[in-house]
Image 1 (cartoon, rainbow, N blue to C red):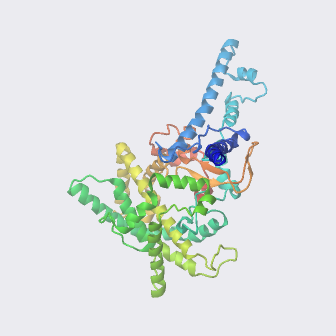
Image 2: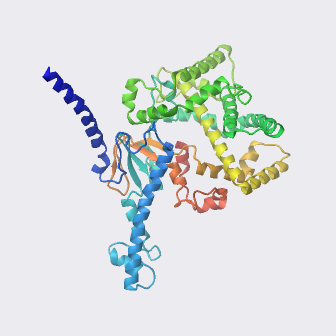
Image 3: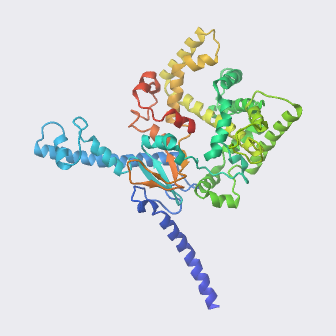
Length: 507
């Protein structure tokens, strides 16, 4: 009896100690590589507790980016003060150049750069190019240098093909969409989907956007002008884009502007809204994907998955049986699914270009890309216009002038070429409130960071803090201010692009 009691007590005490030791060992990973990191906590690493967090996860990453930059700046400031004191004591004539040479005789100081090169060197030592973090126990590399961003997203893309988010094709087939999958399969599916987004296809959909815009205009007229009712703009734009996307994708008229409780809208909202436990599942799946797949964990609720899959299956079955064709996104996927004449190296599972599960997943990706993202972008744009009445007046004047010159008709060409300031207004809103605040990749084979002794090991998560970069004073003067002039032709030509076109395509 005593033996079993001792055995039980030993295991009771030993298990927590073993777990604690496991986390401590995992959290020494970056220290063993001798690279800068913020001190992690058990068990969440550098993340807040997803069940009790006080800020959004993207804001957490932005704060860490800013904090790392401040560490660099504070050390540079100390060095600057040392220069100043020494220069004053030695009465060095001119700037701090001679003083810098006394302190760092082996450091080349440019005649006009003065101490900038040493600042850059110290910045690199303190994490100027990278900051190492942990998601639970998984090592995470945050990119803080634009050249490294280009390496990850373009120049050395073959090392970072995987996108990172948790997918479970068997238990959660809708998660295997083009936004989440990576590698060869992503390349194949993305290439096949490209014809859906050519200028010709977009132009064909433009009139539908104009027609739904008139419906929205009528809605505003009735609610705000005639009945003097306040409008919840985010909710209204959610419903507007829900109707627009479903018509473009399935040729379905949802009428959610008139019926906020429409079935598609109810299920569509649940794709994005999941509460704290969904956040925890997402992070856990990101950190331990194999374990979560073994457990059959899902990110999309089963009833939502079943609703979308059944709806898509019925549409495909009806069109094939009745020989009906539509001018929409799902018709492109049906054509791909039925086309057998493809190269041998294309991804296949059952001999077809797209399985039914893959087809459904790409339909969900189209829905996700056009619904929440568009409504959020336009909501933030209107928010900033409300806060900046002078900018609002200028946009309105441009719209009135352009429409008067084109017989008050909105055409594809007018929007594309003539509404230049309106585009600047939207671009600046997207800078302050990016649709994707963080981009993720996974290193698929060991990668040596250029001009560094650091090797990123296979399996390491790569974070690109888009929002942090967008609000970095190094790239944008007064970054917290809303200023559409940042995106004028003159300003864009004077500013080094933050990322090449290939980065934007792969994001």
